[in-house]
Image (cartoon, rainbow, N blue to C red; front, side):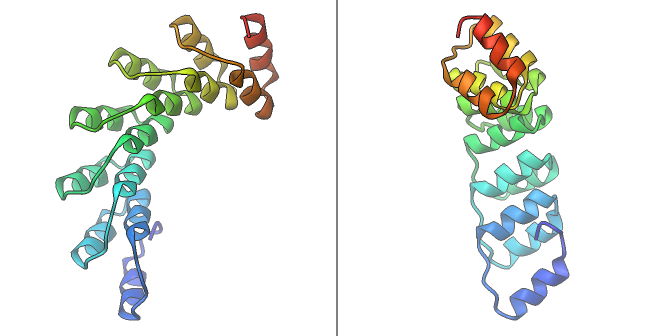
Length: 179
């Protein structure tokens, strides 16, 4: 239902096709609030993947509606928003009680979203060596440099991920700075 074709969903349900939480997740991912509302009104189940998909794809209206109607959420919601650089959604989620983990910093670093990583850290979000790994894997040297300058731990996996990603400039920098 990521395409938002409510008529197709109705037809499938008339033919007794099964649906599950993936239906709601796909509607949320596509930003199709009307489809999500219809699915829920007609008994489709949902889970935390609905909020994750809405956050990751930048659909705040869908996320707000899902939460107002009892959809669960968790760290994956913050991670999804951070990975795709949706700072406003991350801020909204946090201000409304969504929990986060070090995965939020990892997501921001992997996505190359330094502004999101900086905000998360300023708000006390934990980080660990996976933050550096995320930046290295995708070649985001500017993020890796900032993380290291601000005390983020790292380990040999940083180089491993940079090598796997083909980011020789990151490998060279990491080796020149102690790994």
